[in-house]
Figure 1 (tube, rainbow, N blue to C red):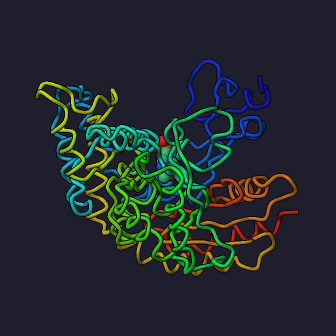
Figure 2: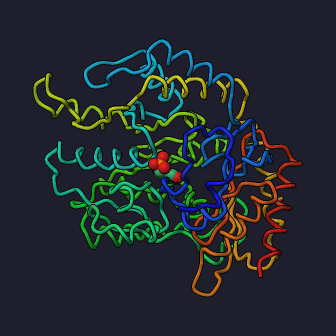
Length: 450
Ligand code: PLP
């Protein structure tokens, strides 16, 4: 029991006993948090309010989720209307209007013939669903040995077994034992790209490592390559110029599906609806989540090429058979779909992709002004995403970023620490003044490091 916390008054919590110890927090140093809790009680626009009544700027748009700003009236009205009209509907064998509308809206926005959407509830579920679809796609065609998934070092595809296996962040895998059969391309962080603005010049050749993997494993055993077109959770790693094109070319030549995990990049973060469109490379499968509902409801999805969908339709046997024995109780939940439709309206009506694009160069300039500060060994950016690498304290690579993030919080700014990096994902309507204040707070927090 942590008595000091129990004695603290936390607004909006009305249970008889407020026991912080009862709560096991995700991706959090629970022991430290419980000594000094940070409780968020409200949000509006680009700001949180904490339990001390302080306003805190949201420098990561939630967890890359809330680019359109918090507590948008249009979304809460759509959610409230939906929950009063159809609060739940089974999605196995039955459907409802909102999910059909949402699938249609998404495929209008998605590139080329990526025109079939399977709904999930999160990015992790989207990654695992995409992996299952890729493996099943080959098996349906009699190519059952094509099961291996190639991920990339420093990749993040959520926390389910497919995702952590294909993912390339060691700390997320170390504790959990065997996953699925995977191998990993090298990451694309090259020292000579340090402090690149936007897409780095060097590193296209790193895609050729896929050829070595094909030589080692044989394409007949590889189902798919899964990468984030721009890595987010490892600290924002934009793709080197030409890299994604090369990866796609090799995949096509060797009959390997390419999956883009766009859980962070889709719906405005980098100024386009999809990174596929932004970078001019169309994969076979795209995963989405996060910004699709502006973070207000859990919803994810997997968008596949027509040919993949048709393969399932053709090969499943008699019509009454289920073509893809996969899905979640909450797949395409009507309330989540209502939130997503309202979010897509906001992105369009408020021209938020344009806002995101217009702010990007201002953010880039401010972010790179941190170069030269102690411990700052690299800075990367694309769109409204930025990453700062911080030199490791002896034996503790995650300590300094944690200290910086906590110091920023005390100054009224929320930023994310992840591994040896600080990550930024600005709300799409951030002003220049807010950018400057945020960057100054980060600079001061870095200078405070001992
Ligand atoms: N894929 C990517 C690229 C992500 O960035 C994330 C989360 O940050 C996920 C998957 C997992 O999403 P979720 O936390 O919704 O399961």
